[in-house]
Image (cartoon, rainbow, N blue to C red; front, top):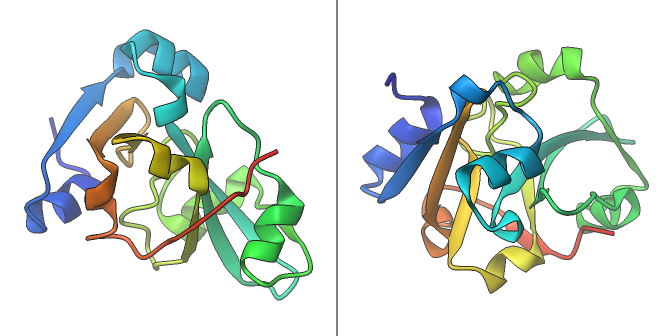
Length: 155
């Protein structure tokens, strides 16, 4: 399998991770992916990219079992409001496409907030940077390669 940006970043930092490949399933919905891979959905996170009133972009990482609370998200980054960016803008902004967006290895590092529930789990699953690829790692290791805040940002 070809290495993705998130894998290269983890390799450089000598962080252990497991790659889960579900490309043959054609699935992109987080809950479906968790089910197919037999993962605890509370440990599987999706990466959402928003734009604030200030025009700045922000990354919010939430469990696939939850919805991002836009008011809490905006407050967590000091914005009046944030809105999801259109799918067609995702690649130009992050370098990733819908269903393969990882908080690691974006074109430009954007301010990142991960839902506080992540601290309740040892394992953390996120997109591997390509549709059909999930990366599983120890949540404690993520802070070695990604600057983020932990805040309650879900409904």
